[in-house]
Each structure stands twice: as structure tokens, then as C-alpha cells.
Image (cartoon, rainbow, N blue to C red; front, side, top):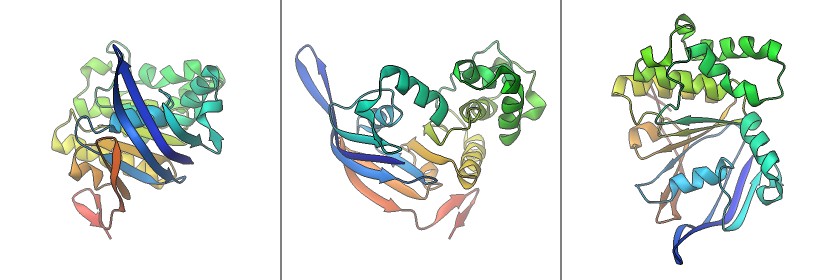
Length: 235
């Protein structure tokens, strides 16, 4: 599904070049659950921006579903982000005065799915994260863990092939964070490719594979021998 080769990203500010990625190469298959780990400033956020088609690399090659990303027009990039990708962020990014149902339906406004199907798709996504009893609540009335579950449902509503989860437990207590990771694992078991960005080892160990990045380069790329599920391990 995803293949990057010698990926590079250089930011230029007042004539000063700052490399964020330097020769990154790996591939991710359909249905994998991959965690990308690294300290602040390591390049992991830049990498996920490129993988999510939110930014373009300065060098190297990024192939998504068999096509080089450099060949996509801006309209094609927007369409792929909407239909093929779902995004979950640390800060939730919900509309505070909109209901759970309204927040989850929002991406459908920019899709090619018929309006008659929007409510059904949203209700199915909300049910997957266990919030059917909160449909009419405004997002400002929800707990942090509930807000993140709404954000996951919103990412699901267009039935994406890949979900990018950028520090999804960063603003949550340990109990709520564990519940969110259990939902993400369940989505992976249903066939969604998951790319998790995190600096927390405990969170990363829910994945099948961990790519560690440091100073813009891959430090290691290893399978997780014992995956966490709840308080237990998957052997």
C-alpha cells in the first residue's frame, strides 16, 4: 500500500536549510498496524504529514497504492485524503457546539457519497466506537476519552483504507488511553491499515511493528513479538 524510498524533506527559512528527513525507506502492506516512534524533533511528524499527503517531500519517492505521489494533482491529493485516509489527532479537532452525529458526518460533506447515506454511515461509525448513546450530545459535553472516540468515528466514516493516529492518547489518562488503543486494535483486526505516531512505548506496543526514527533517519524497524491488548499480551 505504502512505499517510500530515500525520502527527504528540507525546510528553508531565511535561506537556512534544516533537514527533517534524510534518506528514509520502508514499505507498509495493506492491513498492517505500524507504530512510528521518535523523540520530539526526530522527523516523525514530518513523515506522517508526507504519508498523509498533507505535504510533499523534497526528495526521494513516495508511492501510494501503486502510484507515485508526485504525479497527483492538488485535487487528486484532496480526494485521496478524503476517501482513502482517516486522521485522528491528539487535540481531537471537533466542533465544540456540534453534536456527536454532526461531527462524525462532517467529512461526508466533501465526499462523493450520496447524502441519503450520510446518517447511516455516521451511525455505523459511532456504533463501532461505542458511543451510540451520545448521539445528540455536543462534543463540549464529552470527556476526553469520549472526544477521541468521536474523532476515531469521524476518521472511519468514509470507510478509509488507512488511518493515521497522531499521538491519539497524548491528552488522555491511562484508562481512557487504553480504551482508545483497544478500539484502534479492533479496527485493525477488521482490515484497516493503521499508522500510529507516538513517543510512548506502552502505546506503540499495541502495534505489530515499530519503526523508530531519530534525527530524520530510521534507527530500527522491528516486529513486535508480544502485542499488548488491554492489560495482556498477544503472543
